[in-house]
Structure formats: structure tokens, C-alpha cells
Image 1 (tube, rainbow, N blue to C red):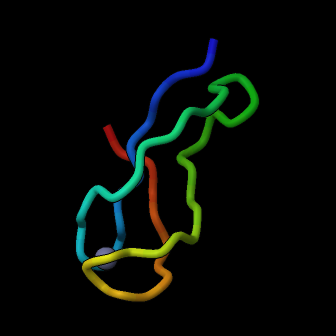
Image 2 (tube, protein in one colour):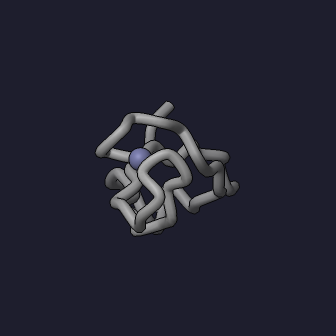
Length: 49
Ligand SMILES: [Zn+2]
């Protein structure tokens, strides 16, 4: 019941990470701060499809 989602850097729009999430527990779009290689800094990454 966990779905694979892709995390996209909101600054450079690169898709850097994929993770899983529980859609029942987290119905809204995920937003996680992660390190972006393209920006070379920690940026907010948002769920995309
Ligand atoms: Zn970035």
C-alpha cells in the first residue's frame, strides 16, 4: 500500500530522489528538505509524478 513517488527540487526542477509514501497517511503533496546536487545546497523537494 506504499506508492513510489519522485521528489523534485523546487529550485532547479531536477528530480533527485525517489521514495515511497503512504497515500492514506499523507494524502497531500510531500515536501522534504534534501540535498540537491545541481544546486549544491539543501533545497525543498516536492513530490511529483
Ligand atoms: Zn536543485
